[in-house]
Image 1 (cartoon, rainbow, N blue to C red):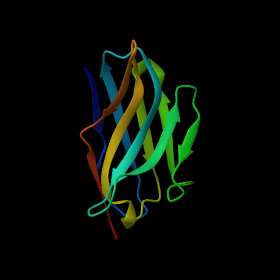
Image 2: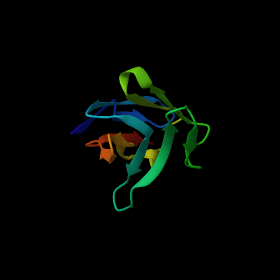
Image 3: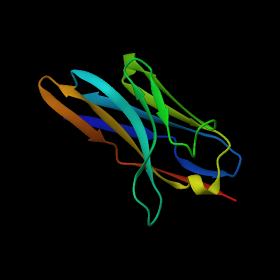
Length: 119
């Protein structure tokens, strides 16, 4: 069983910064991608950023230049540094892991952490 534990959410004023962390534990043979998604009230869950096992990254257009995703492979941990936050960044942020446990495909999600940006 794979567990993803997120931390770092909270309330911040517009223009401020937050850093989210997500640590993966459990039976994992390999990790292909770790990433962050978010879901605002009344909206669908959307990709924020992902990072591959070799450090390749992809960002949503809405966060490019403001958010940075990074990863510590030794700790199976992914981070999301969020700068210049805007009220429209308010959402529940979910960590996601895609990988393998032996011959089984893994697609695990964290419980979510709330980010609230006040104007």
